[in-house]
Length: 181
Image (cartoon, rainbow, N blue to C red; front, side, top):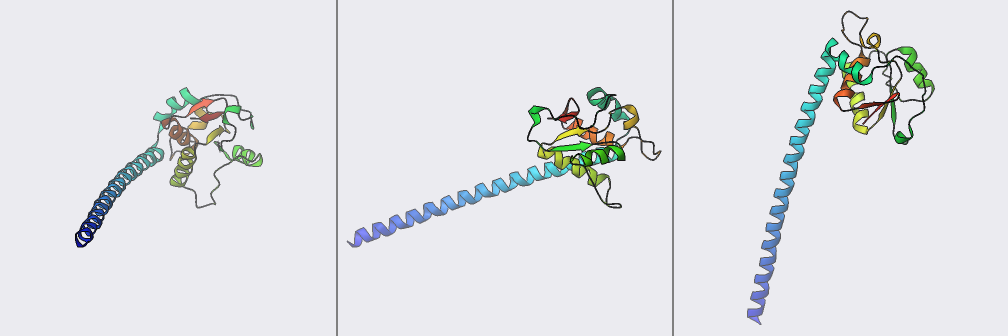
């Protein structure tokens, strides 16, 4: 009986050792997952920083690519959403105030930052969030050289051009009056 107790005690010790090894392996697995998450986070931060840099410093060089992929001359506000995009959130892009007001009046999602709170970083983050969400983007303004070039001598291109370039870089394609992936 004493031998059986010792063997049982040995068995318990073996189970404890196996559990400890299992816990150590699990801890190592968690550590490896944490390293993976951190490296993905570093990549995401680097990608976001690069995207923001491009968004902030974009110049006339982006215009030809935008016009090739998204350009048009006709515009009709509130064109029906194609059936293939039903159920997806729609974000409106527009070049000027009247287009934004019209989009807001028909219930489209538009960026509205209070005066003094808007800047390129806020705009970039808003577009990035919408793209990460899988939004479909409604083109509330024509995509022409006139809507892409800035009238402000301080900037070569409009914010609208920057937004379109960002979506072009993310693989969005034009479908009627919408941009989608």
